[in-house]
Length: 228
Length: 228
DNA sequence: GACTACAAAATTGTAGACAATAATGTACAC
DNA sequence: GTGTACATTATTGTCTACAATTTTGTAGTC
Image (cartoon, rainbow over all chains, first blue to last red; front, side, top):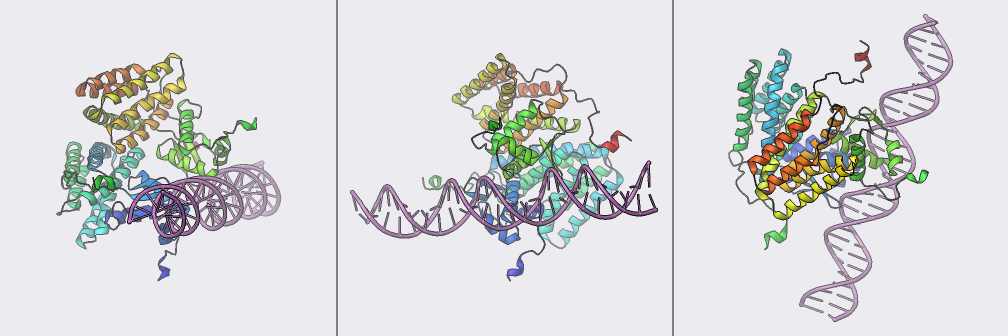
């Protein structure tokens, strides 16, 4: 029972990803408090490392650290959601354009391999893998653009997107299926720059439009606002 | 002599700003190694805090941390420079638009007060203050936009810009004088949205055009590349 | 004489212990 | 009975010591 603790030492990035996944799967709800000692027990690491993880997650916008209070799962508001998708469009269109200018056939094959994984995950209804792979597709594209700077910014934006999707997705969701990614790879392979950029824009607009960003009634934790 | 160490404990943000300023003033050159113990002695703080500072600076793109090797002042390449200014244009135009929609007269006065400081620093040829204030003007605008997300991203971009400016500025430079900021405030006060956005775009284009982003001959530290 | 293997020094990475701060519970006074 | 001040507890923030890794210097061997 208490053997659940991972035998091998978990690295910072691994813990970050696991927390990110838990949030993306809606197992960790926004506003949840993340106590350092608690996390250090769960992952079998020292508190020092947990602290590193939390500061990294804060940079990604996934958690919010209040000095002397602790870390909480963030609750991005509607405005932030719109800003995130606005920036994603700007950045990812630029990325796609640059990818097409420099991509090799081997790299196209690499993208194909990735979308194949996405289809496989979708086929066996593995939601966890689907979420992870979907995000990684965009990150892989950033990697192929050759700009580590844009990749870094996009990494941030994609983790935020996951959280935003959890909070604002409407009843009917279809979590960024593999089809659009696949179609995008087709256009990249054909070096259709205009088309690919348009597809990326449409893809992101599509994701955003599946969200319900109209409701201003986001839950506040400020009790004085609730019982006014 | 050895009393030089600051009596009061320096906070993380203060140390970050001092390092950023040293880089912006070209006292710390790109590629310089930043040893942890060295920094902890200079600022009179523990190594643990130095470590926090370095990870923060890495996030801002000012330093590059290589595992088990140490931290070095970054050397952004031309592509990254262009990406940074591309993103700054996108973000700051959006910020200006939003600021005009919600700014109050008190806040306009606050901007005026800031540009006054910029003029004062320019008048007494205080280059250090001029650099700091110039960056803070853009950050203040982000603050007034009300979007903490955009503010965070922009903070990152501005620190990177400082480093980029140091590396790629041509002989004749005029470090983003106060006049353009002042003119921008005029348009904001007049709620001239179109004009203000255009001014911001022109301002950033102006800064970028003063850089020499043509030379591909950026110094590499990979000796095998040098003596091929 | 030059190359390889080994040893020593320096530097970073990690963990655990201690101090400071904020939240909570309790008792006392009004 | 209610409000305030104080003590307790829980949690985060910081520092110092130890372990792992890399780099540099040295000696031995072909």
